[in-house]
Length: 128
Image (cartoon, rainbow, N blue to C red; front, side):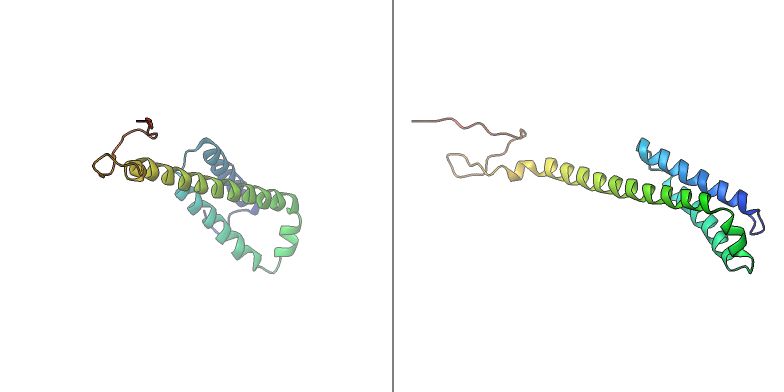
């Protein structure tokens, strides 16, 4: 996108990228998120350059509603992304626990060797 692109097109493109990001986060489809992040960064860099222009206050003042919508959507997406990261970390931890469950049982045979099991639970039998 050209730095001379009309501000309305920039806002529209950024809004579209944020909406796409939100949709992907809600759907659990994370593979395109890096590309979407690049698009957002590109649009934001152009907008930041526009803020340095002498007439920036006048231009941006007429788009306060759009700017507020973009800010709110970006904050919501950040929360969704944080939740997705936390969920992925929890899933990885669960998978690690499942993979290591054999070593975590802590039960022993009559010979004193560690009891190996593929089940999560070990049943106790009363012998006497």
